[in-house]
Amino acid sequence: MPAPRWALRVGVLAALLAAGASRGAPLRADGGWWSDLDKGQGVRLADVLESPERHRGRALTFTCVFHQQEREFNPLRTRFNSERYANISVWPDGAALWKPGDFARDFPFLYVARNGPQKDELLRYETFTRLEVTARIEAVVDGSPFLEVLGARVTGHRLGRKVMDYMLRGEVYGRTAGADAQTLAAENFQGALDAAPDLAPVYVTLVRERLAEALRNLGRNDEALRVLAGQSATSGSEEPEATAPNEPSAPTLPRGGSLPGEDVEQPTTSGFPAPRQPTPSGSPAAPSQPPPIPPPSPPVPTYVPGESLRPSLPGVPTDETPPAPRVPSPPQPPLLAPVIVDPPLPSTPPGGRPPVRKPRLAGVK
Image 1: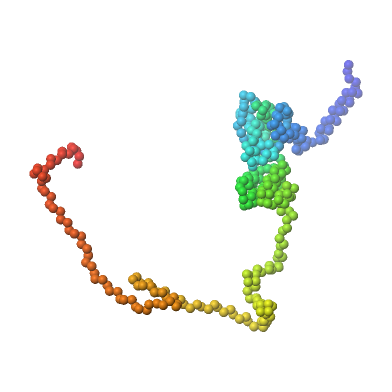
Image 2: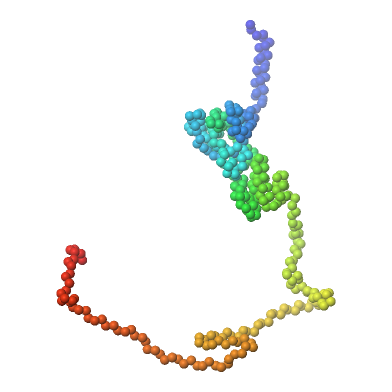
């Protein structure tokens, strides 16, 4: 039975209105594959790794930290192979990557198609870049999920290598006992907070906890409480008063308590200082007298071998008898070695016959 004419007219009118509405509403500039409609179910990667079967077959969106490109393929049990996919590893968001245990627990089973629009961009990310990834679990092998990446983008809050450098140095100093090492650790943890004003809140909390621990090791408990409360470690502390730019600073007194050129009140026997004598105005000050030159010291006597030393201290009697003159001994003739004359050797040995010489080897010279 044909449809009524009025029903056909209503259908055509509805189609025209729909076409006009679609032409009048342009697409959003930030639409496309990463619009809110293309995002998956918001989850934590740590929860997905703990129970992957609960999330199988669904598009999932989670935050993670990029590590590096990998080569973890299992083509016999999954559809991921090195010819069609690139492999990357990430860390779950909130992992304290400056600790060796958390750094070693990365997740290496994320795969992106080599002909995908974001493959090159994803492989160029620097280590410790914080990402928001949408992926789907395609297989679960021995309790580990294998995910295909559908899209990724850098998050507004970040982590970054600069923050990690501060945290790694702080951890090295923090493992050493002593006030100097703990002070350097606290300075590096504070540097991590200052290096990234847009640091992710989860990492701000972790860094503040580590900074508060270093401050407690230094006995600065009040500053540690302020850090945990989200305040600066130095907030509320009294700062030294600044000296006015045109106001001269007070001179430092020497040990005697008076400045050079200043009259010093001398105490009297009554215990009260003697009245200060006024200096007539306009009269020049008496020049300072140079210290007296000490008299020259007497020459040191020279010791002659063979002489007896006499004491020269005051009050000690000395023997003034001059020493007897030394008589030189007569020269001794030089010693001559005795001349030893050897007896002549006999021309022939006993028996009158010379010994027979052994023949030499032929060719030896």
